[in-house]
Length: 293
Image (cartoon, rainbow, N blue to C red; front, side, top):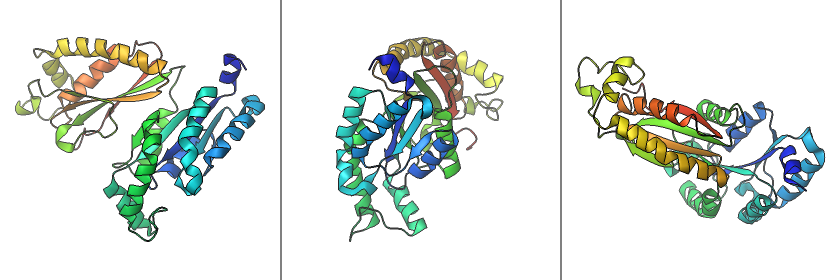
């Protein structure tokens, strides 16, 4: 089967991750986007499903398969199944994760046991599952940490990721954030803007944000700002090109300052303008902590 034929049969996405991290919400969001979604499929059934999609041609252009520990002992074959499918055709794996503390709260809220807790606690089950999923997470193309998301925010995140226009092979999310609220857990790269003077200490600029011209002009006029933008955007270009060669479909570059209100917002916007011209890359901008102060 030639490469063109493989491309014609459409996309396959494996949705997996921690129990309680939002797999069902992600699957529902994909279904709303016209993906054909199969829930709780044993890894051993992935190859037959792939055969079916190829036989069906364009009838099933985008297939998402939810695979998780509900498959019990069958789930242990997922890493091998992923490798075999990648050798045959390009697929993507989306991994949903969250902190142990958040997962415990979610299970307690719905008053359901963790599928792997047995006679132990919910936390025991989470730790067993995290150990089982380590290799799968390592091989994932997209990792979403849902610790700070509600179901509506997660649905929006998934929709944003899978409704990019054009033929981009890689989606780059440029995210501003505030260090005082913690590092973004799903960031691939982190840049620190605290080397620039903070507009917060200027009483005239304090009420504004990095979205306002007054703050933008102030930040960009500082020594080192232009040099950083030129050097960092140049350094990211080969990284983004390499991600495409390695079939990594999504990455997050986080840019932080103290509160995520001024410097990081400006610099994310400026980086987006410079990186929008990288071939095959769709650039998205998000501001995690803008509005928290």
